[in-house]
Image 1 (cartoon, rainbow, N blue to C red):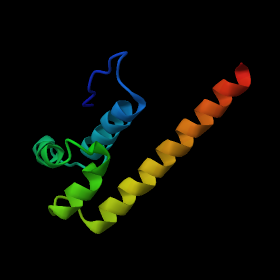
Image 2: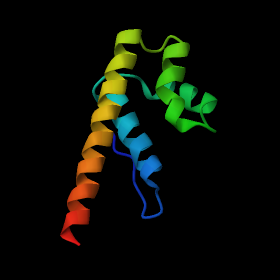
Image 3: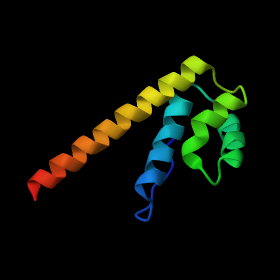
Image 4: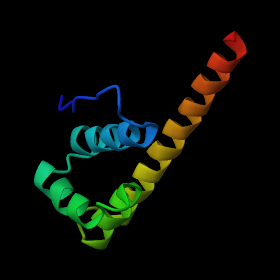
Length: 89
């Protein structure tokens, strides 16, 4: 598995991007080189990485939809965790 090290200063968005990259490489078999190319074009807007991968023909529309579904599920899980932590206070 290709885990990128996370530091205590990583924001929620940084963590989400790292999880996305792991998903792209491990589940969709997108090469690190392809991701690196797309990241160069999304440096100011890293959340647009899936769109850029699709724009440059690195992924198909079906894969883009799969990524959006995965991201939506990730957000849902994040919300559940936050609610659970809030109810413990």
